[in-house]
Amino acid sequence: MITMGKLDGKVALITGAAGGIGRATSKLFIEEGAKGVVMVDIWDEMGRKTANDLGPNAVYIHTDVSQESDIKKSIDLAIEKFGRLDVIFSNAGNPGLGGRIEEIPTDEFDHTVAIHLRAAFLYMKYSIPIMKKQGSGCFICTSSVAGFQQGMGSLPYSLSKAGLIHLVRIAAVELGIFGIRANAIAPGFIATGIFGQGYGLTREGAEKLADLMKNAPSDGQPIRRAGLPEDIANAALFLASDSNGFITGVTLKVDGGLLSGRIPQDPEESMERWYKMISQLDPEEQKIINSRIQEGAQKAIEDLKYLKPEIRERIMKRMQKMAERRQQYLNPTK
Image (cartoon, rainbow, N blue to C red; front, side, top):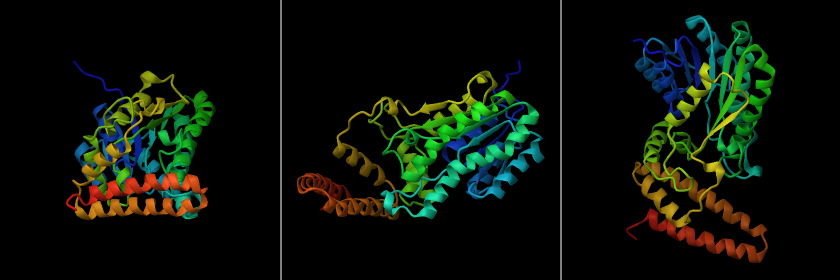
């Protein structure tokens, strides 16, 4: 008996395919019978290794999605090697530079928007003519819970993710008549390297942190476990499959119920769990993370001078208490 895969005969292009969500999705699409998967990333070592492991139906191409010419080349490769293009999963991303609005460098803002929102737009722009000729196609964008709610990502990251939510709605209305669908996925806190990258870790260090996060409890959301790259890969498969061909213009929240309501947590318990987790990283990686945390705390303290005295005093007491606890975790023997 021959078992049919959900993507038999289809060709998919996946950006950010060397790590986390993109790697898990590439693997799943191949398992589900994809005729071809074009893996797009700038992490060449892991991208080539993964494509090689997945076999002849997977191919890797170095692509900086902030560069329009690179995007065109990756689309051209899909057509040249596999003859068609059915699914584009615009998933590549970076955490974006955090901080207060007045502190964010314009070039960093532009770069983050380019990687997330502009790249998704350009992949649509250059592949829509191909899909129109085919009479079918599917766009999937990785948005985020940060696109719905403040405080879940940096400013440029959050704005980009919110833009993707609206982009797929616009595309769904414009393209539906041609048999082309457009949807987004909004992950919650998924154990991927993007968190470590946000703290300034190397790719390798960020992957180590992601592996630790997979086994850490997530008490702030209804489903009390870490989200995994495979959770998002399965959502992408659901949206890419023809069996769900009547779904377009939606953003599927895959967040463990986070946006339904965050569960209150004891900040000290959360801090203790965090420092126990990062204590398993290499000393230099711990130093990078702790330096970034302390830098953020210092900036917050500096801003207190603009507040009314009664408000400033209350916040300062809380921050001092948290700083003392942080030092206890950083220097447990003292």
